[in-house]
Length: 505
Image (cartoon, rainbow, N blue to C red; front, side, top):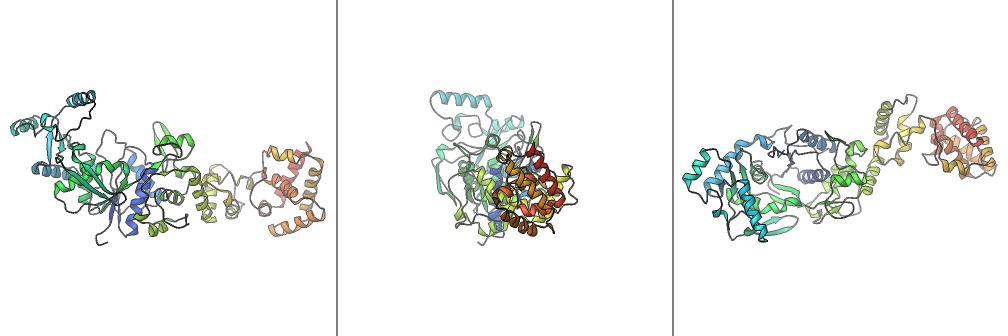
């Protein structure tokens, strides 16, 4: 490709960043970086009624947590700023005047109640009201009024909007890299509002003006914007811009079950995050992937495969591997169903790839929060032992708590299983034998216990099950011999004795 690849993620700060938006940002990032291009963040904050003050920071923090580094944006301005649309009013004013002078746009002074009246009449006749060539001369605008009237209304400060003059009897032919040729009849399009009397542009106008001014080469966005493609296409023609971006409209992320796209409500019902990081509002807090214990690498890996297929059997990718593997050819044209179980599986896989030292630091931090002393413990070794059982980073303390605290409760089913004199005698014998094992390390413990159990013709499963129940309170856990070594002889003997007393009772 000869031209510089420049893509933009352009969210509106009207609330928290949804994972659907995060996936759009990810695909923009992957496409740009696969060609050594630029990833730009543009905040589209022209809708002041829906603006939420903390939303922009949530977007920035979410992208940062996921490792999607922004080349140009509000926090690191490049040569095409400002990167908030609310700060680009001068450009929009100049460009709307350009369209008014060329006859591609016109002033409309229709009041809301007048338009509502026309809509109601159309509905009663079983029709849809469309403001375009078939009726624009019957409505109150600069095409139906003379120049003098228009100027007087402007001088009086009457409210107006500027509408695009959709061409008549035309078929708009657009191209999408994923969906191919898109054909739309101009008769089905309304004259979109481009500009309001408060000096703020609408999405359609600002979007096109900014993409051109920022030299955006590819517009990668959700398929909900596909119906807007014809008006954007026509705007490029109206300005006389010979080069327009190439467009890719991404398929939806679908609900885990049923029809429709994934929503916040689905996450609440089934119990999975729908935001990258925590969102706080006057309605309370909603935890994100970060707080729920997901790794950013796993989150990105999972989302990348919702709507994109790299080919082959490989499923686990780092961000750099995704960049080198990504191509438009792998994108799917249809929606992808969100699978919470698969999401968790990806996180488990990435946790297995996380270094024991990193997990040990996370464990130490969480133990401090809970007031649990870990000074005498080898946290790196403990992290390595419990890692295979981890699905979420937030489970780290729970799956390793028995390394730091004696069991307070024992699995009831296991206690009933071993509730007989024979098992009590077996555990008592193992308790006495503990004292003879020296040195008390995993290798020696394993060798000694296996020999002792074999000599007495005891069941290995029963003997080791009793020991595990004594140490953990459950019949599952990490390697038993490594666990005993880490606990030490004194603690191991104490826990075995505690279970003996419970079985006696």
